[in-house]
Amino acid sequence: MASSVVRMTPFRIDIPDADLDDLRDRLVRARWPRQLPGDGWSRGVPVDYLRDLAGHWATTYDWRAHEARLNEFPQFVTELDGLAVHFLHVRSRAEDELPLLLTHGWPNSFVEFTDLIGLLTDPAADMPFHVVVPSVPGFGFSEAAPEMTVERVARMWATLMDRLGYTRYGTQGGDLGAYVAPEVAKVAPEHVVGVHIDGGFGFPTAADVPGMDEAERAEWDQMQQWMGGGNDHHALLRTAPQTMAYAWNDSPVGLLAWLTHKFKEFAFLAETPDQVIDRDLMLTNASLWWFTGTAGSSSWPMYERVTLAPDGGFAWPKGQKKVPSGVYGGGSPLMRRLAERDNTIVHWPEGNPGNHFVAMEQPRAHAADIRAFFSAFRE
Image 1: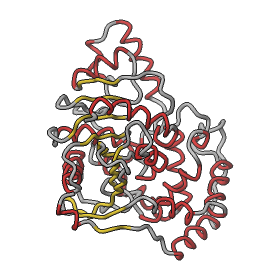
Image 2 (image 1 turned 90 degrees about the horizontal axis):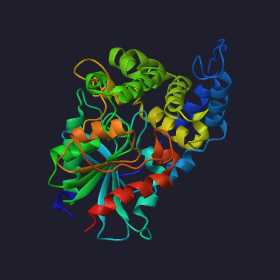
Image 3 (image 1 turned 60 degrees about the vertical axis):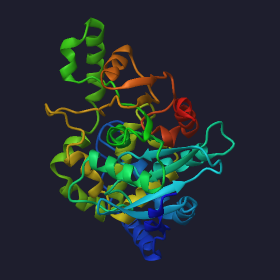
């Protein structure tokens, strides 16, 4: 380990009882709206569904049990680029293994990897990893910054891995993490052996349409129907993140409604998000956002236009060709063709199960695919 490891302070989650009491009191005293006309989720999160979920949060959900589970992971805080950054560092008992840097998504936190970490570090597995999971600045226990970019996060992560003494490692992420993971390879190609993301490489944009053949144009039209649905949180949080933050920071029901709405949209193959993600895991993530008051500061990828293309449209994660790349969920020949413009794709499976947050939905399949990709880089 590098000598600078002494600059890392052990961290333990310990939410005050008063904060737990305040949360339960606010949940119990919530003012509920009338259910608007419309079927199912057509007007947003149904009142009956959210009341049931909030009732569970207030009365039967056990934060202390989940807090204890999170505290089983070794956690630290260190200063990176002037910010106090929280991270998990979980070493496998198998010593000489590849370190793996995981970056969580939005609207998530390091909680996203709760079920995945043990699978990745298991010394009995064919390929265990030493796992590092930083909390992105502005999320959870990591300090927010007035300005933040994906490149800045990537440089911070590269510094963190150097500080931990890791000179050779892989990067992985989904959602926001899919933007960060390849950026780490760009800033530290001499240290990153490979980039694995859940998905996003190769999605076409309007700029790609002129170069499409007839079949690809038909596929593009179908994608537009799919991508046109849902609530455009990118546009919302580019224009008024501060306005929304008041409600999310003051009302746990308001925060829960927002997070549940987004998890429903991301669980596009399920009728409700808790059909594919354990409801206590969703509530642990919501609790972390609530106790840290980071619903506003975690919106920076949108208001800093991380996901915005030069033409003002949505921008998928950009690739790099300095190190090989792979994805958990591949796609059509069109997507593969576009992905290979900016990436050296060596892993493109089809048929892997799950929706958007596969680490939460399918941790075993996710761990297996990560291992399959990085096995090629094992020394």
